[in-house]
Length: 163
Picture (cartoon, rainbow, N blue to C red):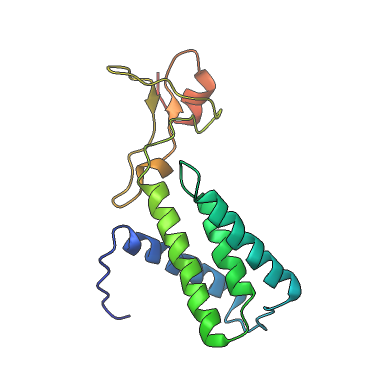
């Protein structure tokens, strides 16, 4: 391995997560070689549609949705025949994924119970939830939280609360 200087906020965490997933894939499947399967008429049409959908969505007050941005990049890659351009499109797919993951990682915790899925009440001075402390570098939004109230005995138990 060689030292990397990654300066984009959140990108190091993303690269490490992708590397861990790739290692798991290599263990499970080994090194793989498959045909590209790109540039079918269906993919070309879907690329045109995805590009148009993303353009329309970008005019909305909230801006374009991550799902449409990613689909546009994926279908552009799938519509490509030139290997250099295909590679560039796949890098764009990865970059959009990195940006989307960074957005998720920097959002406030959703404050839903990891056991029952119901919202956890919040407010100043309220101790309404419990759960594990995030590991160093772990996004807070990925750590489960559980209802702490006595009216939620199963949630308390699922989260390991005592008393």
